[in-house]
Image (cartoon, rainbow, N blue to C red; front, side):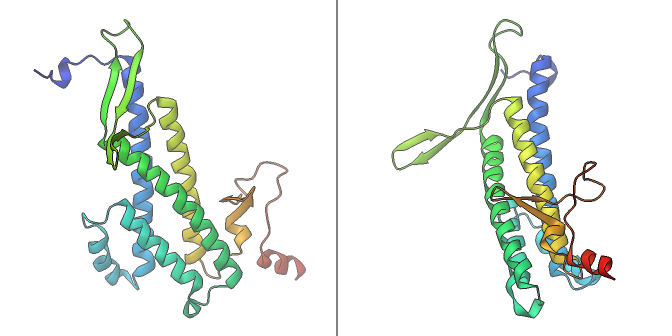
Length: 226
């Protein structure tokens, strides 16, 4: 007979393991909510239509994957459709940023799904203190050759790494939203920096370390010239 939660011992190690999983899931859901809210804002013409659009985007069928798909398509439409009069150079940069975001989001989402739909073993082998801590996830998937085991992060440090990766992707998404929503359209360098073929958010003046140069925008150059 299964024990109630009150009867199950919880060692400090078990608490750490549960906390790491909770942090990752919380950060992922924050990112999903950011995508949902931003897409509603992009599609709604005014406050009244925003309420109606929100109905569709809070439907149970609008899980993480379709939400991101619609968000990506909306950003792509704005970046490439002449009717939106988005500067061509910024538009191409924005598509490149979104390609990176899409790859990261897909990997993070797949990991999150494997974690939540797997069978967890959290705790100790035997009585607490008698062996090594157990932190494993059994996630099997069918294939043409039968069942195979999906590799899933299984330690607090690994899960914290995925949470940090999700936060970094969230920061890029926030700058994407700024890039398509702000008017006048900000220069690429005002939102993103490319290093070693990877995009990251550009440093804000308040974020930059002392002595760190902050990329200027064309508007900054014009203001200085004036």
